[in-house]
Length: 117
Image 1 (tube, rainbow, N blue to C red):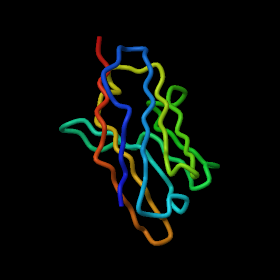
Image 2: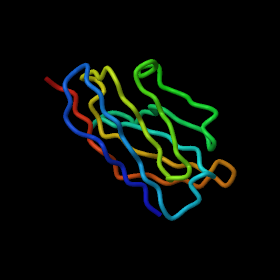
Image 3: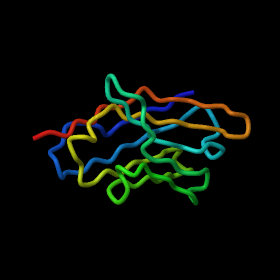
Image 4: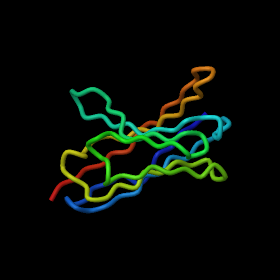
């Protein structure tokens, strides 16, 4: 089982990034997918989540209107489009998969996003 994030990096305030999370080793379409972020010394924060077929999406209040989560079940990939980035968005972003019925979950290793001028 693997969840491999990519797309992080350094961006100026107001800029954009698109994170990707490629899944393998499990039936991707069974799993709700989420993006979390974590800053050293702080609790991990749920950023956005999307249901198995993409019909339900949820966002943290801090990113509503700026971030968009999407998924492509044919490619076993979930995305996070991040626009109008702010310094407070700086964190390690982790991909998370959850099969609710059996409470099985997987985590990716994370990708660093740094928003700074």
